[in-house]
Amino acid sequence: MRTLRMKPHDTDGVLITFCGLDGCGKSTMIAKLSEHLSKKGERVTLTKQPSESVRRSDIFRTYMDSADHSAYNYRALSLLAASDRVQHSSCIILPALMRGESVISDRYIYSCLANLRARGYKNDRWLYEISKSIPRPDLAVFLDLPVSEALSRVRSRPEEKDRYVDLELQYRLREEYLRICAAEGGLLVRSDSDIESALEQIIKKTDKIYGGKK
Image (tube, rainbow, N blue to C red; front, side, top):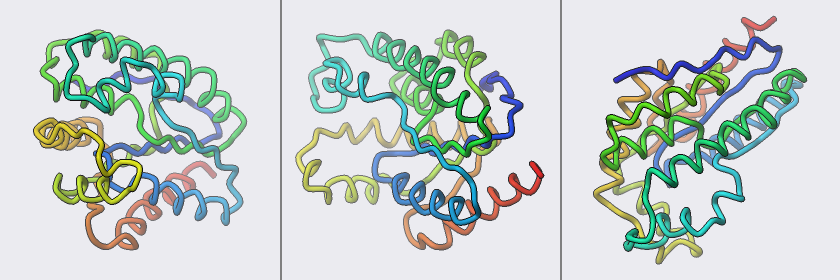
């Protein structure tokens, strides 16, 4: 697998990203890490990709909520999400990093790559070109757990108990996240059992990054 050629941001800030299946525990880990960093005196900015404007779009909601995707092309959705990531990274994330803030992003360009590959677009190269305009994270966390556990967590949410989920796609996505994590030098953390142990791994890594900034 080719690696993404993201650009070093070379700022006083720290960029930490979280990726993984829906239900992998991103929200929980992000909240706990944010609390840890805030207690250490860091200014924390929480953000999410893609932005709400993309998440509310017809094409995004079709792919998230319906089994019938005949009205749209998935590459078109990927391009929409990728352009949103470039805009978001350059106008929201990078300025925060330049202010010396700690930015924690719920999903990043890795999610776009994982979804493209899991849906069969393994020969697309345009995303690699786009990645050159996106800041490389100081730490890319990939939360991993069995698909069955992730699905169980999603179904436990009242607002998502009846949501359409392509189960076969989830298995392919998990494999792609594992490949991308290895290729990009990410931090792979099991998130299906001991939350405190998983958090400890992340905090240990982040504390080391902040120590190197001083």
